Length: 215
Image (cartoon, rainbow, N blue to C red; front, side, top):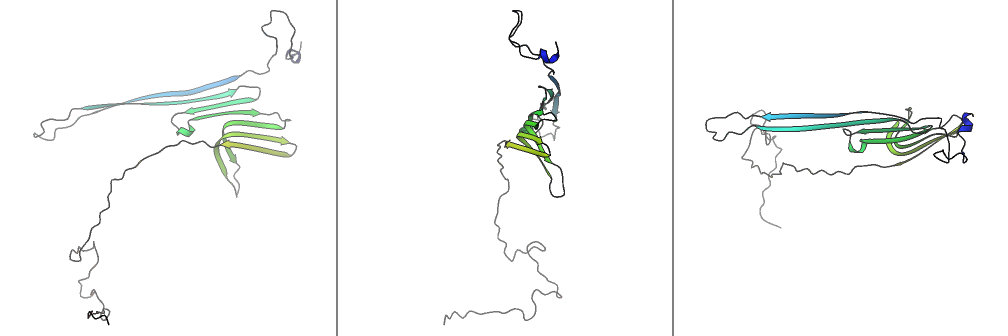
């Protein structure tokens, strides 16, 4: 019996068969899992020196223990005849990029559908003189080809992480009036006392006297 005949669906057989469908796959799933788990422990102890005899209650030594953990895992492999899986997890990355999952279908050379990708994708256009584009997105991408005609379809959804931060400033606004008698050289305003640089130019000042007469 050839392989093609062995892959045909068969509904007849003896009672020793475990199922009603007998098929033989031409491929085997294959996955590779690799990564690392890092655990770091930091121990800190502080001792305070005596500042003088007047110190009646010296501070006691303090200790501090800090544990840091990192997990990075990657999965690569094939789950179908032409279906490939990619899984990346990195808890050291930003929250929106810690987990990336994608499935990719690779079509045959003579098929219309050449590629179907689902999940976290990297969309990029070849750099040209007028256009350069590269963006990460979550969605689907389909690439098709028929003769000399190529088609690409893309659909995506937006992902985001909402966060809020509150900041309290420590500066205050203070209004201060500076009388002209409180002169400080090179700080409030410039006043010349040098005879060669008088504060006023000759005949540049006009003084008006109010005679309190409104007519």
